[in-house]
Every structure is written in C-alpha cells, then in structure tokens.
Length: 163
Length: 96
Image (cartoon, rainbow over all chains, first blue to last red; front, side, top):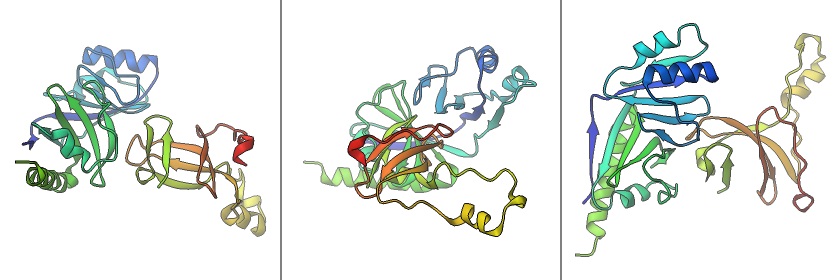
C-alpha cells in the first residue's frame, strides 16, 4: 500500500532572474547550473517553475550566498520554506493514487523531470524521484487538504484492490 | 473541455488555465486625449466573431505565463499558440 508523509526541515527558495551574468552568478553560488529546459530538475535541487523562475530545494538556507552573489542584479531571491509544504508519496501503487486525482499523464515523468499541475484541483508541483517516490510541493494552506485527499485515495485503492 | 497547448508546459486541460479576453487590444498611449466614445470603445467593444478569435490565456496551475492563441469560437479548435507581443498569425484556410 502506498503511504504519504510530510517532509520537514527542507529549505525552499524561489529564484527569479535571467541572462548569462545571472546564470553564472547562480552557478557560482550553488555549485551547479539552473535547469534550462522547461519542467526539468537540476541534480543539485533546482526545479524549473517558469522561463525565469526556479524553486531551490536544499537542506540548508541558500538565500544568503545567493543574495551575495547576485548583489546589484535585477533578480529576486525569496525564502518560501514556510509557504510550501513538501509531501512524499511512496510505496506500491503510489503513481496510481496520484493519477486518480491528477489529469496529467504521469507515465512519461521520470526522475529529472517535474510538472506543475492540479491534484484534486489544488495547485501542486510534482517531482518524481528514484524508486517510484513522488514529491509534492503544495501551498501550506492546501497541505492538510492535499494530505487528507491522498490518504483517502490510498484507502479507496486498498478497498478496490483484488484480495 | 478544451486541451490547450501551453508554450512551456505542453498540452494541459482547460481547467488549469485562466482566460484573459481578446488579444491585441493596446491601451491608448494618451487616454486623456480620447473622446468618451473612443474610451468606451477601448474599454468595452470586442470583436466577438463567429470564427477564429485571438485571445489571451494564462497557465494558472502551471508556469503562470501569459500567451496568445487563436481559437475557433464554434468548433473550439485551437489553430495557433504564440507569444505575447507577437503579431497575430494567419489562421489556416481550413480553420476559417
């Protein structure tokens, strides 16, 4: 059976900006480059949100070094650790649980990709990870709803599974 | 339900998007210089065609970017998707 849990303690930041100088400064501060292709993830923990927007996910606060490296540039670095909840859905049937509330075709999504879409009408950022694990980034105010919905979907799946 | 091709995220359901009204309506550079009639025309008058319509959409539950598209108002066929600021493309003959 699939299971869902909330992951605490991650540091999340939204980074906005563009241009060669911006990218070089960010790569210098983070130690890796931002993903350029839409809906992809850089191994170091940067998820594509838009053509000039990324979500940085890390165990420690990255805003300080970034602000320093980007001093004087037209860009934005915003700590959103408290604004988003991170849920992890794992176990057998996790993808089917997700698919029961999400209209996006999840089959083509592999680790290294990400997608922003709606899960049970709530805005969610999906990140498939190794081992069939899904990470879901949802707005903090939607976290309880999203989690309750997923737990309900897991229970439904368990009831309808053949013995 | 329409499927809309977001220029960044690919094909998604209509429910992920917000409609932004008719495209290519430029704000007059000097509103004070306009007559009431011309200002009302800018504010309220829209093409409302039976056929291909240029309109603005935003991928709200996705990348949150605005773009333009051409949609046939009878068949709902989306015949072109193009960036904001780009000129309106010609609709293919078959779509008119």
